[in-house]
Length: 82
Image (cartoon, rainbow, N blue to C red; front, side, top):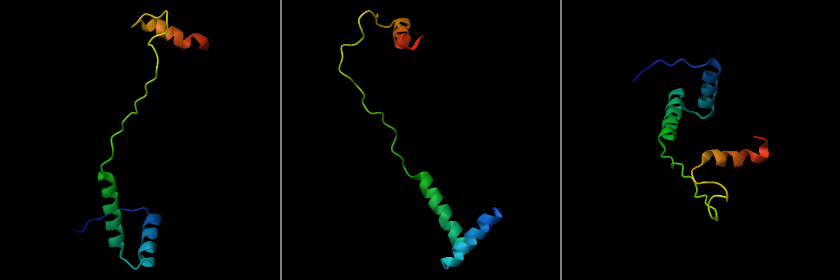
């Protein structure tokens, strides 16, 4: 199939030089580059998994009621002038 693609002049010259140095055609270089690009886009990536970050403890500090976010927030910012 034939198509027209507009390329930046300096990129086009660089591709032509590369093709000449490697004794290949401009078409082969572009096809290879596009195949590699598409292959990279479809590589299955491993989904992000957050590591288990637990700590030993007995729960909330004394003096804080469970679920009282106002108390928890106050304690967090206590030493920071908040």
